[in-house]
Length: 335
Image (tube, rainbow, N blue to C red; front, side, top):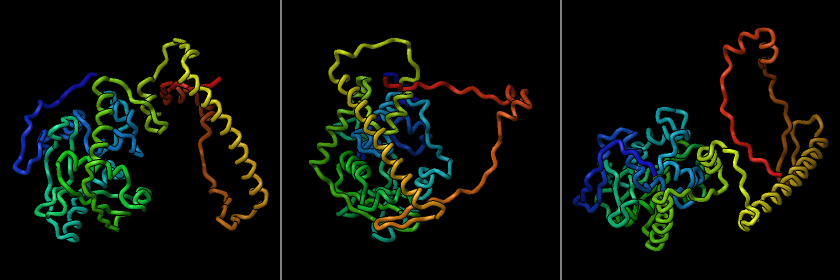
């Protein structure tokens, strides 16, 4: 595995509160902070490491930890249309409102923390709760209108894993999760330390870190994240033809793939027939109501476009001036 460290290896310090500090983050740039995170599994990595993150697969996380993520799309910290941006901007506000509501005092911990027995387990915590016997960590979250759906049943599993990872690293007993929903509703949830869950979490994370240490890609999981990772990991073919006829596992996977595609084709045809039955019944109406829902069939607004074929035919010189190259991509065809 190729790793490049942009900052010197730090000396681990144990504070008076018993936390192992891998490095102070006060003077670190964002790139340096990201570099430190590649040395282990951080709390925000934990759910992806065990396959429970709805946004990132094990395979994509593995690319990051093995420095193969240079061409993966990264969130722009200055993009004020991205949830990540508002999460950072609103974090101190969420922490302040938590203090007001709970009466607990909090303070920032400007360090990457490290588990005393498992050095690959790292954590950044948003705030440390001071002087409370009941809770010691505050995790601040924000969720927009779409993200708020994940909080309908309480703390989402991937956030629970993140917080349990923090409790494992710090040795603390409880954490509060304060989430701002839709920009105006603050909810606070308590997560208590669970030793059995932590033991299981450590074992699963250890398995993922073994993939990193041995430079072995973890299995893809069918997610969009894994699809992006595979395209980045294997962008081109080399012309070689592999013979898997004697591989029972892969031959079964190929057979099942064909069966699933056949089933999907039948379902798509059935869906189209049902849709057309309803369209024919609706006719020129805009909406139809049924016993358990409704269907709308409305015309969108007219719009204007550019006939590029005619434009380039009338002005062929423009095509050479404005054409741009597009990299080819691999097509997965089943026969």
